[in-house]
Image (cartoon, rainbow, N blue to C red; front, side, top):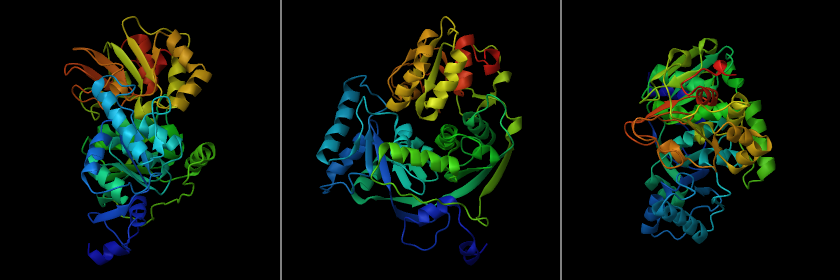
Length: 434
């Protein structure tokens, strides 16, 4: 295909958003661009490096104190001296530059749940974060991706970042979901189909009537795990569900930036590939050690006894996740010898879970209900695994040693599967206990 023909073709939603943030009139996959960003973020693992690099330059101030978020969520409340010092560095930098969006313990949440909740990332935005799961915000119809800490430092100064325009793979989900099948299951199934490098440096565009039927929490879960397929980003075209969510966040939190723009892919947009799925054939999934792509239907995994269940993370720590888990656990007990750890993603979710009685249900079932934190997801704290232990988790990665000892095992699943497994003491389908 000639260059002229490419330029005459339509654009994907990803290409439209990137194009709207640069001066060039046309772009194509493979182009290197410098684009203005709408928002950027760092956490207590990645931001300290960015701050150190920032301080090495001659910069006296950040590009915009209202477009930066610093969120100590990985190792907080501080688990040791190093994590306390890292969190302190974020606080001091925020204070020095009067950064508006610094969220301390008691106000903070897991960054990728907190920023959409506060209305700080919006449709049509270009968002970067020094964390690979920044791709979560694509559920809102914005382009968002993870970057390195040095790129974040440059963004602090210039308000822009470099990108290679990604090709896009279109994923179309048709049909109606079976009971107990969620967005998390769709994504695990997809990663199992294409592999952990199946969308390498691509944008994953999720479409179809099954996507339109998903609530926002499930959409966030899907885009969150785009990186687990090697993707640069995950994205969904905004619809009524998206706009309702965004407007509610704006009304409640009154952020400075309230305007947003809806982009949709052109009918003649070019895709690197198109994948189609009939979701009515998909069962609840589980990802076996030690890759997210090692997926199977839950009912095909037999007699795997477990030691721990974790419900939470930036993937599945939202209120609907806690609701489904609580409904399954209501009036039941966690199997003796199994630890159930539930971690709401934000303070607002924590509060709602208490008000709705979910927190009480978890405690009465024999579990614990924690402050918002990434905690055990990355092997940080609040649930590290010992040698030989097995954990069912609603997190996003199950690499060797991800949650603790190199000889421990992590099985990725939805909140429904995780809750059912906590009751049975082994990997279980929700229908066994519901």
